[in-house]
Image (cartoon, rainbow, N blue to C red):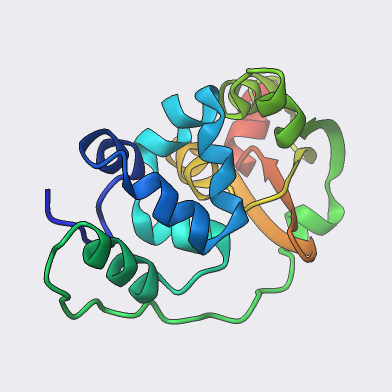
Length: 177
């Protein structure tokens, strides 16, 4: 298996279980991979580029470290462009939080934050929001919710703490309302 920024974390660790120790040495955020729910869900979907963002690492350095540990030659990896944090959109500022999910607590209880978030957003009306708090960038959750047609806005509220606001699109809210 060629290790690239697009390599999925779960399949990589299935093929190279010894690389889990490398990930753990690079960031404490990867300790969450020991959680079986996270390993079965997020790790199967998250790419190394996404995982690097979740852990606050440079994707190029993460891929290089894993390639070295796996005995693969280093290659040139495109660096993603760092974008400044966008201000909260009007829908996120003006919406009312109807439900709050603590993703870390769900994971600790062996539950899937993805399943819980999908269940929590379905009944939302226009102007209502789901707030998901989590200790890492929940990129796979964001991508899944956006593919389902929901709006998302992520902000880092403090070091190692993120707040994800999720709401129906205007059309979804009108349909539901």
